[in-house]
Image 1: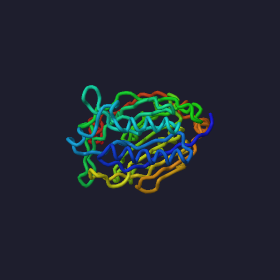
Image 2 (image 1 turned 90 degrees about the vertical axis):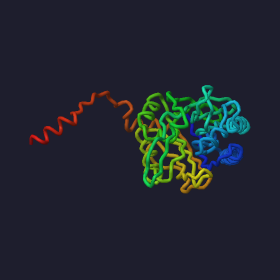
Image 3 (image 1 turned 180 degrees about the vertical axis):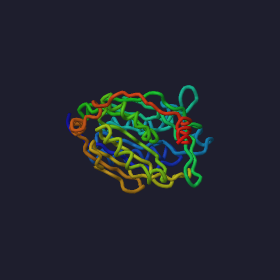
Length: 293
């Protein structure tokens, strides 16, 4: 398998899918102009909308979505693999999915992934999020081959943002053959400053895989603030490209699947993994033993 160029585009999506589609096209064309044949956008490329009524008005089904149609045309016009990190899609049952979509150089949809882990958290300073109140979680991990446009059979594993904190997802994808892992995100500034770099590097090291993480960045129209710092990390955990800020940007790096194979040969933890049982002493018994002593 030969090397190829991958790009992560950093955005500051507002509340209008139409305006965001214009920004998406500009940044994707810039990435393709730098030689990237796999291009990834961040989570919620289509719009970041916190108000529930405005959100309902902004999003539609996949066949009517402007981000989908824009991405499909761009992939075909530029002859690239275009990975929409995610956008909100109205499902047939009336619920919203936080959905990643991969389009091939012919414009066809290669794969789709619905974010599994919902960002339901209460952070410091009163920052609180309940993603499950708006979106229906996915139930299936996805790994797909990308071949063509100068890419010879790399295998891509999907994830979105908060999925990053669940290493079992990435391990399952690596065991299924993924040598390129994706983490498009809209990390909050608070959590990004604390955990973004270390978690992305850990997922790369644990699995001997490249990680591409396109991010949202800056102060958005709906009032939220995201961290930016889009990253590409190699299978040894080295950061090979970074947007070291929160402004819209394009980063590009070479992806060499042979480096993933080399890392896994040096440290074959995927092969060395063993099943085990957990023998956990009940808390009540621990407390009784402590009192007796």
